[in-house]
Image (cartoon, rainbow, N blue to C red; front, side, top):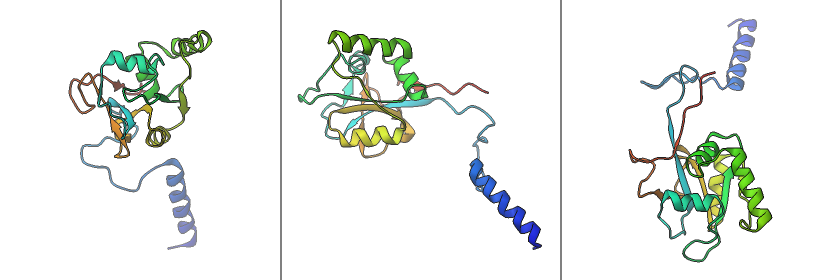
Length: 179
């Protein structure tokens, strides 16, 4: 192979890595990354594996994520952990569980901290891995991630008796709008 051709091959491989282009063939039935929007995904509510709770109603979940419920049935303090504002998972949780938008949610916590109705605002982390690790390490923690980000280090709660794989499960992250 001529020297200049080898140099262009190296540049091409480096550019592919930087741009995230894979050399692996696409799976059968899978669409190209930018060909269409990804399908709607479910949001899993996760707790520490030692947490005795297995199911919360949507109403109970709302009270937990609004900081209106402070302790688990075993007396352990509830610690909320959330993704950063702007993340699709956070938007879905605030919309579906809290029935608010980001501004109303922030206002709720500011008002609650001021009046004493809420003692602690949620811990905010940047990534699903960070949320999962936090929940793993903090026995009273509750958070949320996409079902694809769940592993055996955390427990997925049922919401209204349903797990994220159930057809009637209601916590979904809508696909991102086409650009």
